[in-house]
Length: 451
Image (cartoon, rainbow, N blue to C red; front, side, top):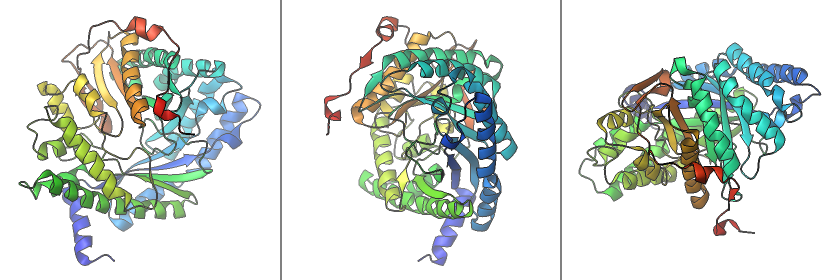
């Protein structure tokens, strides 16, 4: 039962510590929209999304007012479009336009699901679909894309990895005037999940119901504030404090998620426990790690501190919700976290350290700007490295990297809003092309055989 102290504590979290519901994401199945032609299918897709999600923005606003908790983003995810457009993959951009138009009409922030699942092999229609991604991301405003290139069960599809290196490069080049923002709306996954509410990687999985509400909570500022109250505690006590704080944050998410699902006539899906930062000062995962005792994120001890944080968030959050899913943990995007931005500007954090950190956190190399002349094969090799971490460790990993056109090391990219800004980080100059161009598959690990 809530006491007056719980209520006052929650109010304080919202007012002073950046507690918010980072996103309400409605997942919508598009399978019922498939028709004989792309034009007919696109029209059905537009009408269905507009009908299903017509009240999501108002509902979020109403809930925010009633419960006093900000709901920052209203989003929609859909069935991977490559499956919907399989009979006419060259015309998949028609469905992309329909989705982007629907998102604009609804007033939502992003719509995810211009996606493909090619973790084992790449069918002909998938190759055609993948080739449409750069132009689609350059010509739409709210649409996001993701591609699953590997899994613990299937291994890593190196043809898809190679193609993704080229797709990231072209997506950035086609949006050069916006610092390559097309690549910021694109994710390459290993072990992608079907109920992720966060962009740019959200899509509505084939095993999901017709319409589902997934919620992502966030409270880096709340966790940091809790740790500030125990500056001399040992790490055991720090972990316990993070667990208790994550429980409180997740309870707020559970409450909003179930009520939103009821009002929107959808199923309650999951609460994603991820600590998602923003460029706002005080809302940083990096600053939590520094509160644990690091002089700067990126220094020795960073990976261990992140492991403690990620595990404690999951342990505390899982007790607070009847359904936990999505990515759930701690995000470490560079451009979206003020602590990461400043560490990168100081030279305290680099790509190699970020890769090491992904072994223990939620996702991967996220929102990192690199020189625009980086070869596509080098980008593909980065994707392969991250996919290998995910495959071997049976966890979700991802790459969202921006080869910023015309930019060199030390320059800045600036996307504004939640996407933030970042310095361009150096990459290794060594040539990985022969490895990438060998093709084939990196086989699944021995521990994947569990039948």
